[in-house]
Length: 226
Length: 285
Image 1 (cartoon, rainbow over the protein chains, first blue to last red):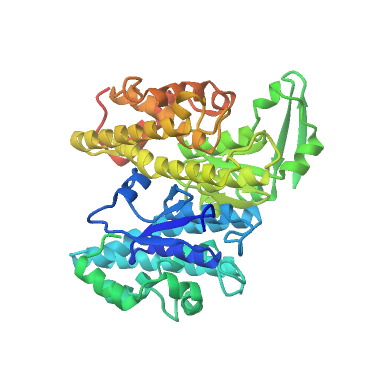
Image 2: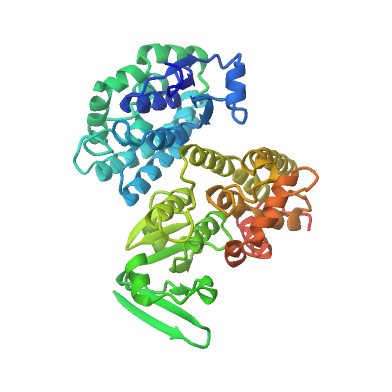
């Protein structure tokens, strides 16, 4: 296998950002070496590959590191443009919409979720839950807009937004136990509920996402820093 | 749609005044045609060509916003004409709420009636739609693109919130903390400069001419000067971040920056309005 294309992924089993990259690599049909990291005792490889943030995921392609999950996803799509399906749409306006929603997920969903999970005060927790549910409601609208009746944000097949949200799925499925509220329900977010069913059934999801029970256990005992 | 094309031989420019039905729905919104100063020195663009090639472009913005400046730089690099609508972000009007209901922020680029939001998304859209016009904004190589996106994300996630925090700090202590964070972010960008400028051999992050990362960093630089005038802190210190300072000078001297980047005093004026609204600690000067 010498001289061939070499992909290495530095990650942690629980990280939703790492799950995103695993999803993309699987969907593209790419093989890679996965190296589990200990974030309490960071490896030299991690520190030299991501000196700025010292975080996972880091994708190392033929020795060159790429950091930040969203940057990695676009890189995979561009470096492997002729391998497997395209992750981003081809139309520039649809690409812009996809990028907008991925940015929205990162800007708006994570923080209230964390507040809902870690808040000590009842008032703070309630506020976190309220904000998180508002964001989820907006994403229900986004799904309707992007899918146009088809199964995924990306249409007939899984795309960039599906991967960005899908990476968070194990956490979303554990939200009821961790935050005290269901993020999706049939009354308010029927499309997202159906999307969750479809997404978790994918081979890629089975490979890339951690076991929900194990994750909930871990999050509770560690008051997880994600 | 009504399109009026006026040739102004006295200014040797061809203006395109485009109004659309949308503007009649929102009466009272100023419609200012923003002439591309580049047109003065460039060849005269035949009207038919611009109308077919560009479609209808409107930009909702705030001139002193770094994110709006970023988009205006991209439009300039591509030689695009557009209608610019200055928006009062402290008193958001219907146009902004209609075209950016999710974030209610500027910039919003409206292309043939379709809105695009988030400056990095807009810049990439402009680069892709008008790939053949002007110069490429993102490089062709996937790894170079990833590097540019990584550092652009760093600017938006670490530099911008830090310097904005200086303006909005409620106490001197909080302000000092934000000043420290801003300086730390700039120190990190010096590392990026060492990497991307090839130790100073290349003039810009993108190479011989400005590109995605130059725009991302460059649109924050007039604010570094504005903050220096307000608070007396030298953010761009040639002793501490020599590569970045040299790059900033070259960036400011480019045709695009000269045409687009606002005067730091305009930023100062806006900052004072912002501080008055949010009641933050007034600066020493």
